[in-house]
Amino acid sequence: MDILQTFLMPGAWLALLTLVLLETVLGIDNIVFLSIMTSKLPARRQPKARRIGMGLAMLARILLLFGISLLMRLTQPLWTVETNWLYLSVTGQSIILLLGGLFLLYKSVTEIHHKIEGAAAQAPAKRRGFILIIVQIVLLDIVFSLDSVLTAVGMVSFTEFGEKGALAIMVLAIVVAVAVMLFFAGPVSRFVNRHPSIQMLALSFLILIGVTLIIEAGGLSHFRFFGKEVSEVPKGYIYFAIAFSLLLEVLNMRLQKKVKRS
Image (cartoon, rainbow, N blue to C red):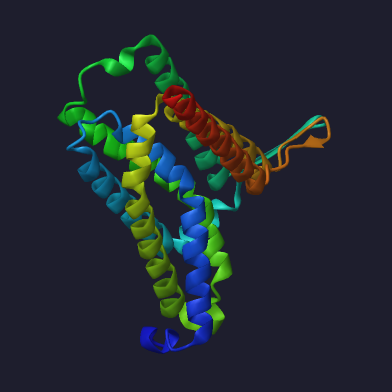
């Protein structure tokens, strides 16, 4: 079955819509991190950094898709530790999530420290800093998107659409989702940069997401300690906590404006 025939099937468009929604919802983490990282740059360079960062991140996701065989091997145990009180089955996916979670914790705590100590008021990032920010955006996007890419591979039927058709659906879903995220990244970044309290809240979210990635790495490794196995944190809880905190902060900001007017 060729690609054109694939998109003549109603099931293909349903799969595409589902994947776009999935990639966009899971991309909220990317937008928050993107806003924090690009805020270090001069205002005129921030849109360019967002475009380059998200563009390279999109290419990285597509390369992950074409490395499906490698992705599937990432879910297979690399080595196993088993004792009377400890069990651990390490996979490539769990290692990536663990390293990504630790890096996210480090960056978030460091940014909070800089803002509290006033180091954030230093001179804008130079060219080297610009490149470093782009690299960090791409690396974190790979960590964030690993789960969604593996989920996409599991959701799209290679039997129904064929290998080329399934890959075409997934690639198109990634392109559309990244375009949607890039469209909202500008307004979100400007809103975050205008409100320091939102910046701190966003950094707190990143700490929460970093801890979640570490716990998820333990869950994927089936980590058991004295018979107690680590279980993954449902993402619905995380998104609800983020949405609830943002709602409270928005209400607090409106209340402060009302007080100032009166």
